[in-house]
Image (cartoon, rainbow, N blue to C red; front, side, top):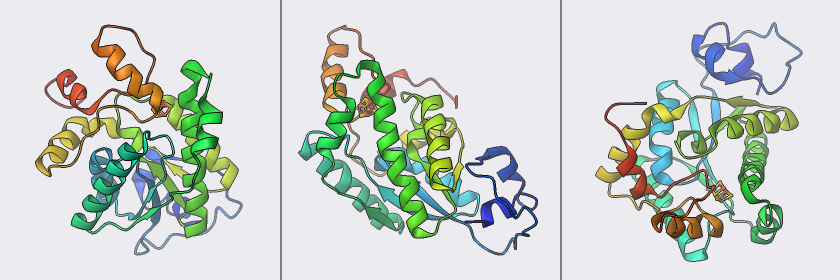
Amino acid sequence: MIMAVSCQGSLPFLNESVDRGVLIENENLKCDPRITMNILFHICCAPCAIYPLSRLQEEGFAVQGYFYNPNIHPYLEYQKRLKTLQEFSTRIGLSVSYDEGDDLDEFLVRVAGKGTGRCEQCYRMRLDAAAAEAVKNGAGLFTSSLLYSKYQKHDLIRGVAKEMAWEHGIEFYYEDFRAGWREGIMESKAMGLYRQQYCGCIYSERERFQKSSGKQHDTGADPAEEREGTIKKGKK
Ligand code: SF4
């Protein structure tokens, strides 16, 4: 867990992109650059994981995937996304743990009646679990594929993740993965992955249809196929 902090001097990218979640008492610990750092990678779905995963691997992390998304409804949709990730991770050789705790009730209690505030509760629930899993696995860092979507509330995710890092005494790795938006979409299509049509919860599923009928909605995520129509040439 200490490694990420003690490596700051020798791995310059950390200075720019790691949001420190804790103050480490022993700042004099020296990093051995030959040691690979473990990172817990929270994955919301396979298509959104592609680009962030490539970046994490480029940076030399040993990545452990983690699927915990009680926000995905209905159950058949949840199963589809989970199976897609299982197939994807098998194809590329990524180790992923699946947390399928029966947390539907808790999720609904947290988000019901929250209006536009429901996404914060959703992020809190998932990132809290991700940070706890990172601690359990002995990973000094965690991050999330939620940072990839142009339609999520990016700054809110970053803020919540930092808070969770503080609470669990680990580090949060921040990077604006939206830079690889187009690249990720192209790759997911090339791999023939299932691409969902809405963010996850029943509210976002309803908004998918409201949007297509011209009604306003407040969801931070758009359907995968609609996203494509909004893509402009080049990276953001
Ligand atoms: S719209 Fe997406 S981020 Fe917001 S609560 Fe629903 S599933 Fe969670």
